[in-house]
Length: 351
Ligand SMILES: Cc1ncc(C[n+]2csc(CCOP(=O)(O)OP(=O)(O)O)c2C)c(N)n1
Ligand code: SF4
Ligand SMILES: [Mg+2]
Image 1 (cartoon, protein in one colour):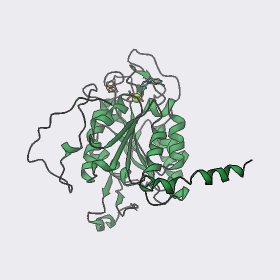
Image 2 (cartoon, helix red, strand yellow):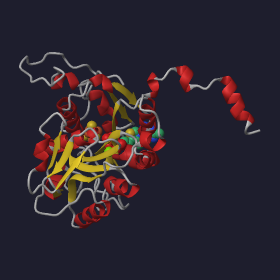
Image 3 (spheres, protein in one colour):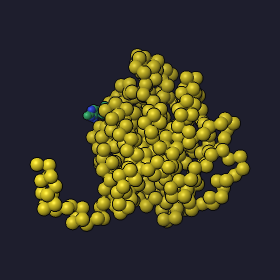
Image 4 (spheres, helix red, strand yellow):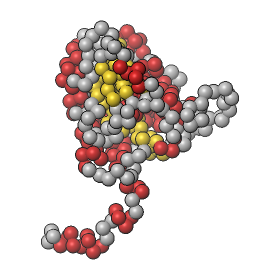
């Protein structure tokens, strides 16, 4: 995807991470989105998360489909690998990337249109296979790029900018993912970077499919009075389940065992995700309870945010298929391909 390069001028005092890089080193091209679009705030949160994780840019692959949201992979990590797939087909490409090189950190960005209509089947099977992918769903309730038609995540009764009400029941990506057996499910708000950054870091550390649904208002087509995906509505109806801390392995892990700390989940790499209670008993490792809790608050008109469900025990796609630890991209061709004689023999068995 072509994008306008950013000027390389930077403040000499910018803090550097363990790799000696500043957040500016994790930026991409200049955004061409509308000023105030929630998607740009999510890009900023992704940049902050990968910078804090000391992720080497060449070890990441950015994948997306089509939409304003899907354009955003051009706006961060310009030194990473990238593939902008056709509409709704990002999960298939991500599956291929993960199959071929399991060492790459896959970051997928999609929209509610891209994910919940044309790409719904793709999303469901990527969840089912538990491919190792951070899947950021930038959810604004509309097809922003094609000028504001309702998407499948629009709530009943939510009105378009011209005043027509949506009458179709919505698909909630969070409930869908929990039902399908997703191993990491979270929801954030583009206007709350403080909450979103640790969620993204935990999603990146998770070994398996990590769905992060982010309410991301479309200021041009869906930020008016009668919209349930506007800045005002989301700020007024947001229910933060429990503040989330992500503690990478390199930090003081002992902090994870603070007395009264309700749930701490140790991730595969030894990092810890910690949930601090805010007065209600919420167990993000209980799938049925998580589903019921989200539904209950939804019925009260609340948009539940936070880390909603996590399962660090389930094997990812490579674990299920028993593939070798070494990335297939490093296996010599002669070992990958059995050769003509072996294939002929195999074919004979089916004659
Ligand atoms: C096969 C195909 N069908 C339809 C389109 C037109 N189209 C482009 S983007 C889009 C929807 C984008 O909505 P969403 O994923 O929610 O992204 P947003 O722009 O809201 O961020 C559609 C229908 C297309 N590009 N390709
Ligand atoms: S049309 Fe909407 S989603 Fe697209 S860039 Fe503008 S504000 Fe963002
Ligand atoms: Mg959209």
